[in-house]
Length: 433
Image 1: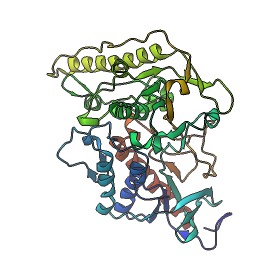
Image 2 (image 1 turned 180 degrees about the vertical axis):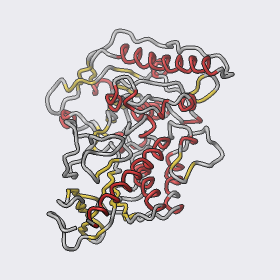
Image 3 (image 1 turned 90 degrees about the horizontal axis):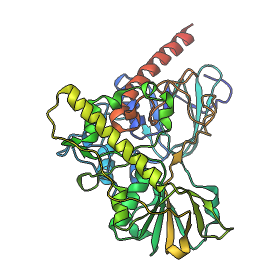
Image 4 (image 1 turned 90 degrees about the vertical axis):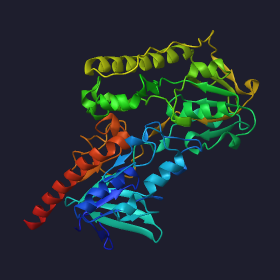
C-alpha cells in the first residue's frame, strides 16, 4: 500500500483498532482468536477512563452480571451487586492478560485518512515520537463521550465561583466550603448531587429532562427484569422513533450501598434545592445571577411517569409470562415544588462552586473520512459505515440499548469482527487480482 498520504516509514498491519477500552479490547479478542494481524492504539492506558473520569464513590448502575466481554465475564461473589470504580478498574484491567492483545499504550491517534488504494493511513503520537500505520481496516472504538458540554457563558461567571466538570469531580472535599450547584440531572449529575448531599453539603440541582427508573421492583433488580424482557437486545430501529433513540438520556438510578432509587423529591424534602433548567447569565462578565426556567414540576413529573411506565411494563410481563413475583405498586410523590423561581443568585445563596454535568459530545475531527451525519456523529449500520474498511464500536445505542453497556459490547464486537474478516478477504482478493 503506497497511496497518497502514506509515509515511507509506515508500519503495515491488517487492522488498526483505535481505543483500548472495553470496546477496543473486545474486538481485539476476536482478531487474536482468528489470527488477524492488528494493533490496538490507546491514547493513555487500558481502561483509563474508568479511573480518570469517575468520582471516588462511583459504582456501576447495572448489576455485576451484566459485565460480560468476549471470553471474559464477572465471576465474583455478588452478581446482583454493583462494582465500585476501583473494582471495575481491576476487573477490566485483568482482561488483557486472558488473551494478550497487541496494545500500544500512550499512543494517541491524531489522524485517519483513506490511503487511495482501498486502505487507510493512521497517524499517531507515541512515546518514541510520531508514528504511522497502513491498514486495510480501521475500527474506531473511542466511545461517544469526548468533549464536555459547558455553556459558552460559563467563562463569564464570577471568578470566585469554582467550576468543575463532572469528569473531574472526585469527592465533596475537593470543593471549597459553601453550597454547590450541580447542573444536569442525568446519571452523573444526580449521583454527584447525592454524593454531596450525603456529605452534608448544601446542594442546588438544576434539572434537565432525564428519566428515572426503579432500582428494584417486584423482588428483582429492574435491569434484570428488562434483560429478561429483551429490552437490551432490541435493535434501535425497532424502538419508537427509531434511530432518534440514540439521543435519549439514560435513566438515573444508583448502585451505591447495594443499590437504591434516586428520588430527587425525597432529597428536596431533606433540604436539597431543586431548580429548573439554567438558561444563562443574567448579568455581565463576573456576574453571579443565573436565569432559570420554571420546569421543576414538569421535569419531576416526566421522570416519575417513565419510572411508573417501566414498572407497568414489568407488571404486564409478569402477568404474560406467569412469573411468581411479589406485588408491585406505582411510585407516589413524597414532595411537590412550591412556586418556582426563575433566578438563582449564586452569591446570595452561598454557592461557591458549580459542577457541570450536562453531558458530553463526540469529537471525531481527527477522522478524515466522509462518514458523519450533520451532527458530527458516525453514520453507520451496527457500527459498519458506508466506507469500506471503516467501522465504529462502543457507541451508545450502536445497535441496541445494551451497546453502550458491558452487556451488549460482546455481541457488537462479534458483528464488527465478522465484518472486518469479510473486508480483509475482499482486500486479499483485490491484491491477488
